[in-house]
Amino acid sequence: MNRFIVFEGIEGCGKTTQIRMAGQYLTAKGLPGLLTEEPGGTPLGKRIREMLLNVGPCPISPRAELLLFLAARAQHVQDVILPALEQGQWVLCDRFRDATLAYQGYGRGLDIGLIKRLHDFSAAALIPGLTLILDLPAEAGLQRALDRISRLQGVDLEDRFEREELAFHRRVREGYLSLAAEEPGRYLIIDASPDVASVHQAVCNALMDFIGRHP
Image (cartoon, rainbow, N blue to C red):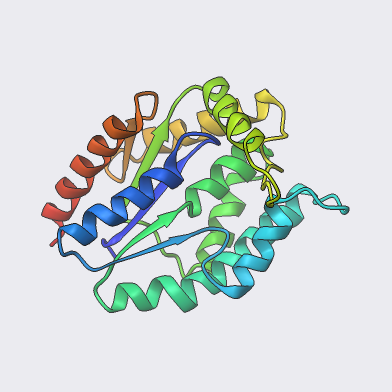
């Protein structure tokens, strides 16, 4: 499953822009690929995404939040990710297991070991071959995210997590950095502070290095 590459990071880190540009880059290189996201990727995942990322009339407890993310993942892995990998495609995914560990584990304070076990059950123990963490200070990322939301008009804002206090986002960032420190062979931290083009070049360099080692 080494062809599975995940983009991670705090709110406002630019990962969604970077994964889109990375997909275009791989296409230009003639490498078959699939871009997908979590929560999402399937009709069920998109329904769950609406509940999780938009502020609604019903509060969602941390445990319910965790189980909703995992339900979306179970369908996503079965219907989209595993079939694409079996066909030999490079799969680029916007968030996966480490987002759950960072947000619901480090951010919400839920048990990390339990989250890992539930992930293994819901996702057939699938682990990315490479996880790119686009990193920047929580203050900068949150400000970027809020600036983006302020420019949106007449669309779903998907701002439920952006409404969390700064301390939450700091815990999420520290969670990502802690995960990377525990398993440096699978993670690569990329500085997300520079301009989009510079970050894109760093991402492309990382992708081609990884692909070169996993043909």
